[in-house]
Amino acid sequence: MSLLVVGSIAFDSIETPNGGIKEALGGSASFFAYAASFFTTPRLVSVVGEDFPEEYHQVFKERSIDTAGLVTQAGQTFRWKGRYHQDMNTRDTLEVHLNVFGTFNPVLPSNFRDSTHVFLANGVPALQARVLEQVKKPEIVLADTMDLWIENQRADLLALLPRVDGLLLNDSEARLLTGEDNLVRAGHAVRKLGPRFVILKKGEHGAMLFSEEGVLVIDPTGAGDSFAGGILGALEADGNLTPTNLRRAMAYGAVIASFTVEDFGLSRLRRTKRQEIDQRLEQYRKMLTI
Ligand code: AMP
Image 1: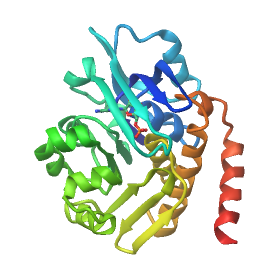
Image 2: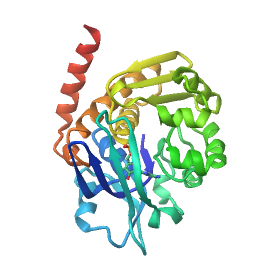
Image 3: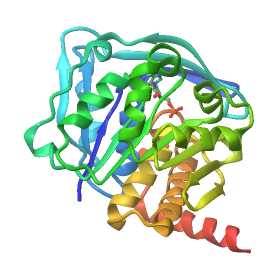
Image 4: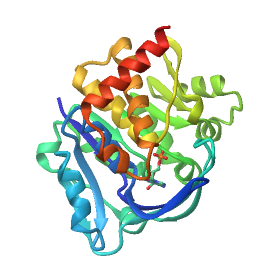
């Protein structure tokens, strides 16, 4: 078993009603890999610029994330500026500077090609496809995307969807992708585009799973990529994709995301012990069964 993630590594500048932060380590692949590292040793494929400091490389090393696929290229690291609203669901992108991430052409290290679990974190759909082509025999492929790619790279995204097992989207992205206002209809419509299952994130209102078993609602959720890292990390640790494992993995994802949102950037996750995650999962399980 082995888990591969490709996606962005960014300097995030964030505004929230409770304060903000400038140029913190973030990016879809960072949150995912850090969250998944509580379950397994994720293999990270991404790109940074020459301005990426050594202390941030150490953040990945402290969790034994395999950075053999992390390349440094001439230019600047991806920068993203966003504003989260009080409900943590609505997120406005204020600035995106793709920089080295915009032209990144990933070549997987040869020992990454046998990865069984693959997360195509938020990023250019053609880049997500190129990574998938280099993985020999993936067992589970989960993808994420966002409005920028749905609007600007729709054809590439639609070509990718039949090749993935699962797709993560938030509610507004599902509406944008399908043109359906009603979320349940939108979830089913996304499945028709190819993925076997679809996880719709609804901010503080949790997430909905659409699969052949029907619809499941789980609560709560938070930062999307660490939610995904918890899901695929737990699935990889379990070994196979059964309906029960998928439900438990979503609960793990929600628990990890609940840690992430307690502080800015990766700060809270960096103070989190695996034991705390299992304790919170247990509280969460009790809460659901009362
Ligand atoms: P989320 O966890 O879903 O709230 O996503 C926020 C993360 O996505 C931030 O750390 C950003 O750096 C990253 N991000 C924002 N826009 C993009 C984009 N267009 N492509 C890849 N990553 C992005």
